Amino acid sequence: MPKITRLRKEIEIIEKEMESLQSFRQTTQTKKFLRQLMGERMNIQNQIRKIEQSKKSKEQEKQSRRTEANKNRSHKMKRTWNYFRAIHKNYDTKKSIKQLRSEFSKFKKGLETDISEVIWRNPSP
Image (cartoon, rainbow, N blue to C red; front, side, top):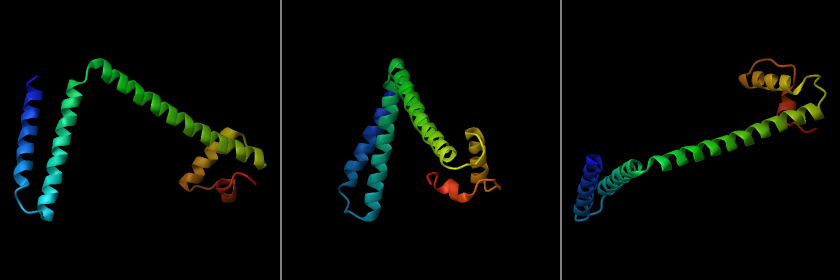
């Protein structure tokens, strides 16, 4: 693990610089530099944490990210299909829900559609 030891040495160097920076008077430049050093330290700590993570925990994190993304996608799709169902139910457009969806994508692109803009703005009458 030579990379981890190298990163820890970098953290020690940064902390020494932060301590020596405290001896200077507080100006905007010193505050910005201190904030930058803190950011670098956090970045290196995150790198160390990623290296130390086991294969199993990485896989669990990846899986949890996937399930959360699928959940968000599912909620969005339910919301959009409910929107098209509401338009289909409340207005006589003589189009199926799938056709409404394609008309909506045309509307979003600014192309000409058979359905008025008022219907897209408010699907409930």
